Length: 165
Image (cartoon, rainbow, N blue to C red; front, side, top):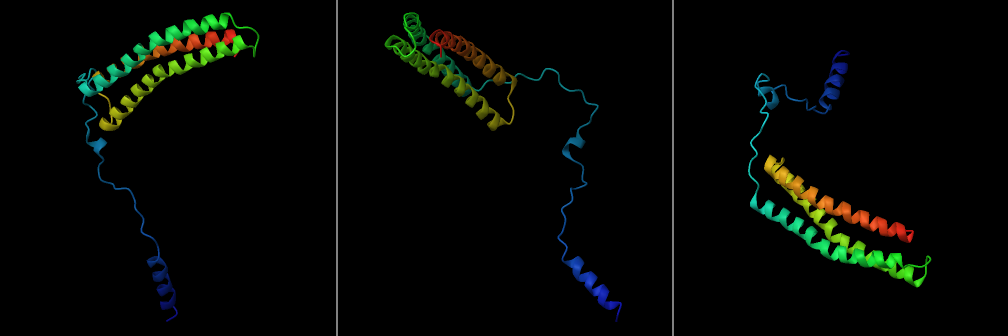
């Protein structure tokens, strides 16, 4: 009887223990790949989805199209900055307003860059990876818009420095 009570308590406490989920010891999918197989060095480039190509072309065209207005506003802002008087003068404020308009026009380029990033993110989400043709098209579009962005940013910085901002 004395032995029965501790055994009953032991049985009750083990019955209250939560079940544990241990990882399976079954072979994993990566273990099914023969490690002696050669890795393909030049994967197939795949094809670029026409919708992706059109969206990238539209974003690049928007950035290119915004450069004409940007360049015109930049000439105006540079002229006003060159003629600007001391800080807080009316001519300085006019130059600052022109610089602000230039920054707003620069938004066309930054929006195009954001659209390219969004296209890349959507393609990665949809396919979990990018085929080389899609990756190359995205990189080319991003590089072209990036070059436009760098040039416009340098212009804005140069005019801003002339105004002391």
